[in-house]
Amino acid sequence: MVDERKRERLREVLRECGSVVIGYSGGVDSVFLATVAVQVLGPASVLAVTGKSDSVASWMEDTAREVAERFAIPWLEVETREMEDPRYAANPSNRCYFCKSELWTRLAGVARERGLRTVLDGSNADDVGDHRPGAVAATENAVRSPLLEAGLGKAEIRAWSRELGLPTWDQPAAPCLASRLPYGIAVTPERLKQVERAELALRGLGFRDFRVRHHGGVARLEVHPSEVARVAEHRAAILAAVRGAGFRRVLVDLQGYRRGALNEGLGAAQLVQLGSAA
Image (cartoon, rainbow, N blue to C red):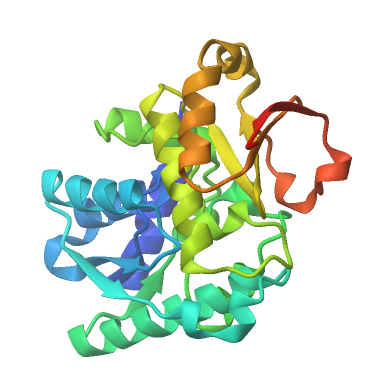
């Protein structure tokens, strides 16, 4: 259930913003925010903008486009060039700051060109306290977070999304592909493509909530604890798919997928080796 006071507060915040450009990734939060914004402000006052780059999974881009078309959300895709920033490519622990700075600069330009007043993101109440250097970039660029301002958490957003008939209501979290690389391993288009190829293959095998972590020639698989047993069932297919993406060895993290794993090294995880190239 969603508190009616939070519902009304979200609508109030959107009305305060007047007309908006929304950072629209195709994820649960941004799809929900864009849908409600169109309901409250009307389509002429809303533009959902997706940043196109190597760090965004192709299936997320497809989701963003398909949902925008289905729910009549005005949509635009713009190219972002964070990969050209050596500070981003070096993959420090504040990598997201440089990525989001690029995104919000692009969206601010779109807002000026279209005569739209406020740039919005999909941060929610559950994001507070997490390690999010991207939030600093949002603050610096005067980006507002209506879901956070309304006090809406992820469970409430999913529940309201389901009421609205949004297909993303139960979609697993899907941060950018660069989040699969441990800090300090350079972000390159080639590495991102390796991760995406491997993850697309696992999606094809029916896995929903998982990550393929890139450790050079080693792929570390994190799957949701409820799906760990299925790894053995699909062992051969997983090996073939992940090796086909360019990894020499495949390890399974027995702790399973969990938030914050990006900060862990191989030595800190419990690992089972599925196989390695001869």
